[in-house]
Image 1 (tube, rainbow, N blue to C red):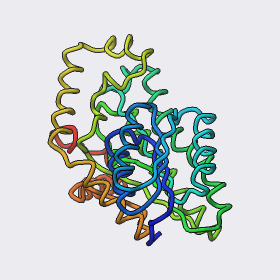
Image 2: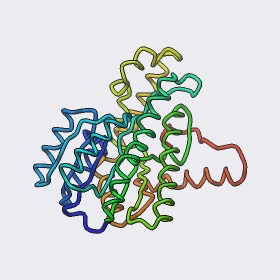
Image 3: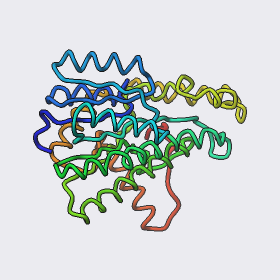
Image 4: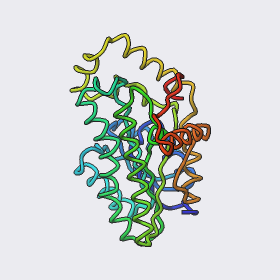
Length: 287
């Protein structure tokens, strides 16, 4: 998709963070935007920003975990814009920072519902209609470097992002095998300065009553503060968005905004090929 001007992008998780930054970056390229998020007020704010750049925006409050909600998003997008060329399955949550066996089952379900099923719902709903257009298109799934390496205390998040990377690779193979005009990309950032780490605020109501029953509250709070500190010192969503635009225009698959993490990925692959236990150096959680 070398020429983005006049084409339509759908972005989930668009009310803040990487989603908002991508929407604004695409708007600067002359694209029309369909913005989706649970945060209706945040969507309207981003839509106003998109409009201020001279681009057209449609905001549709959406719960990506619910197929019927994503179906309404698709109906609105195609009815209003006529076509969809770029689908960004970006909505995501971090979840609790706990040992695997202490993670509430509700947290496992929530993280997988948003991070994995949300991507599945987007692909299942939008891709058939994008293929019918018989025009160039691109599906961008937001994964994470956590989909390629592992570490302690983030098991639901790591496992969900591994699923997103694998799903994206499978989708790429399928679309190539069927000789379609749709490209696929998977965004795998490290820490980004977004609200993803504001864990307590992101939790659904049913999780807040069980979120710290399994471990001393001060230990959980210390880990969460460490994550917030790392996030605050990390790169901006705008930097990520600029790389995404470039990748979409070039039709790239893997998008690594943190190239320094490639050494960690290589180290893990060497552990696997050597059939030795996975290594985790005694350093901060993002390393």
